[in-house]
Image (cartoon, rainbow, N blue to C red; front, side):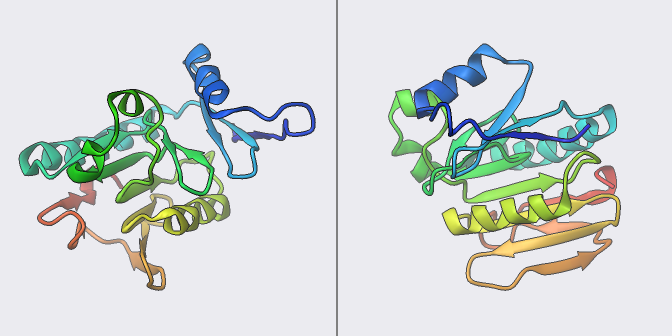
Length: 191
């Protein structure tokens, strides 16, 4: 099952509040919205992908709890990106200073910012090209570090602000570099 993209713009242009309410009213569905207003309806993850995603988030959350310099989010967290898209990366992290600038109301809804760090774990239903475009969109909106993990080919694409994409073949670990100092993702449970 692949994601379904619907262009509603000719009949309705959803406000941010309407999009948020649509997501709340349909909690069994996963939605994203492009900067041009196209609605993306994503199928639920299969068991294997869900497990790998959980393992990835487990490692990120454990590090974030111990480190204390920011907050980690799983794939159910929504972000209203500065250039207009609404996205939910598989895993993400925001520096505490940026989190603390948000009002309590902003913290409860889709966060009006781009994470400092994102991970997209390519699932069998994902298009590699579309996920690469999403990673570039994150860069355009301000991420400092992003990983696109392609389990099928055991590749990781690393996205860094102002640099060319780096492709790693079958790495055992990934470093959070200066964005997440001390964070190391062990890929054994992800592959």
